[in-house]
Figure: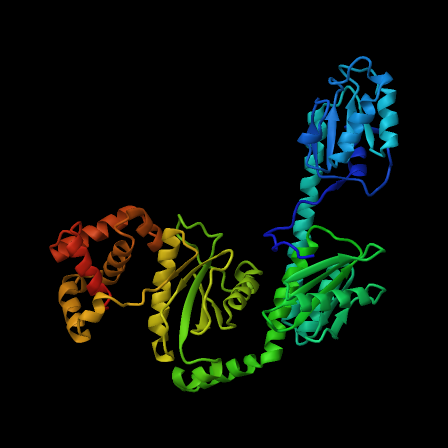
Length: 506
């Protein structure tokens, strides 16, 4: 069945009921139901309702002092009905407090829990329900911290494996080790290309799941064998036909995240192998370093017209100045280079640059950039290789506007309209004359960029400050300085229109 999108962090793992019973400070005692190690808790909930079904999500330890129990309950079906509703709601266990309402746990309740195989815990008078609930959440937090640490270590080891001379086998070996099972790379025809981990009876079902994924053209698929082995398959890249298969004896909360990271890395590696684009890019880089013009090497990269895309992760708050991105794993987040490469894959281009304060992607113009989850994008107009520097500036301005307006993707304007009515040389001459007072000032770059951004954001002080990563008072001072130099009223829409027209010529 298809799986959901990869979560930002793995879900909180449940905690074994046995771990709660082992807490000596609580003095809990199980008096009915199966004492199996597989019983786990997803939370704790207190209720004195006669029918707790509507208030349970499933997996909880339900705590009650028996306030809801009528005096004649032992002679009827009350406890059977009560326990059956807890089981129907997915409750994991029942905790019964023997004070202050009852001196002992009712025998009929013990019998009902035995019949419905619901673990029943006796909560002694000195133990409060709050203490029990707090203990459950503490155990869950410890489990979550341990799982996050496991996922982080796995991500780092997978990234290191991808940099080895034999990256594909190394990534598969690391993945198999981290999930305690087997990892296999299947080719476009469903044949096994490489594998790691011990072979088992799950190999045939895993290969079948991979072929099923190829026939469905889905992103992921999962299944479980009769002996409880968990199977998962991940399509690599877009239309390349490679599939990652994973078989594991258990399914821990972080395993999907770990396998998804491996799938991203293998997508990049198999894409290089199939298309040979890595060799072409290396050749283009060497020719540029030896003095070739961009237009001469562009055919090696796969196109004549290009788009420049600037991107920043959404995790950077748009309401505050953007801190620089880490330029390398040693200086920052070790997963960011992988995320940047995944962004390039999503945009349809492997030409990715993890710069000081932005991720830049060079995309062929025939590929339509689309919003990418978790990223804010600015896209330039189409440009020939000789115009890449200008397109880079356009993308930077588009990204600034996207961050200021909290828009997932902003494109640079096409330039059609009023500009087409005025000859280029006349328009540039008018622009130079109008903006000459600002150009002659000592801070022309900052003033021009502030004026341009402020006009593009309809005179919003706050959004301009966000886009330029400066204080709003700085924006006010610069705009006032521009107005003084120009001798114009910048609140006049005609003045704003003429300035915007002139700025477009720079």
